[in-house]
Image 1 (cartoon, rainbow, N blue to C red):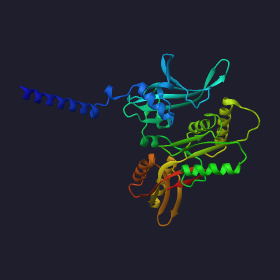
Image 2: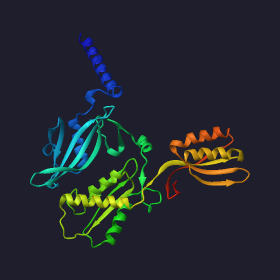
Image 3: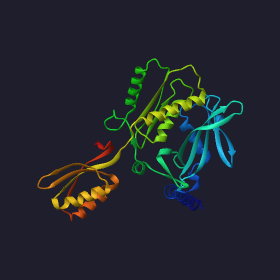
Image 4: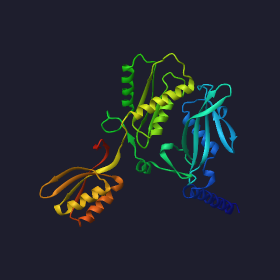
Length: 357
């Protein structure tokens, strides 16, 4: 009897373990493997306030506003007139991510205690892993949200750059530090050099500094301007001389944001496209058809060499490459020879093309 019971117990345990493994790896929508909204907001809080040693439960309070739960807090280093709020908007279409909005609020009227939303940033929190995506890593489509993973995101979003001093269109944190040091040396007598930068393309690094200004009044407004302009590999440094007038918290935020917007407006922003350089070789009978195809698709021609045959170098985007090759091959009945010289990125500036190999 004991032996039968022992064997039955082993079979039962094996079934339970097998069921758990099956659910964990094959049934992705089981509820108890996904965190609650409250657990997700706690993860997001620690992500936003990295380095904050205070306990989440002692800082964050929840309230119901217009039927939705909001999470309010104020970290010890923040001023009395600055408050933060997190609000869960909805789930993504596949129900794997919570969509949170993060607001930074400032007091505008000390008597009425009125607030206005100075910043608004969105995040997506994975309900299974706790992974956090910034707003530029997923797209809002219609009334619902769709998570865009890195490879798809890189194809969907055309990154914008402006920084003529960096030959490959990329920027490092070391180069950003060098830029800041040059500005400080040039304007050595200024009181503040507040800055922010966005480095990288898909996986971006974002940093900012208030450089002695009240917390959240300088560096973060500059960063928000960069985010809003959707530029990458870019740094803005705003140098301030004190003119004797106290601007107050709201005034500082508006001043630094305005200066950053004017800096962008005065800069050249170029769109860098991922693609390739193609070498096309054909006889004279096929050149007319090829030029027509390139013209219809507005494919830029870098060079043309006419001898006993015609050789052309063109730039084509990743999205159009295969279609262009197919059209030229079909249009010339296979007589044209097309070679992919090298992958590259390119951008048009004043009618000329910059190429990053």
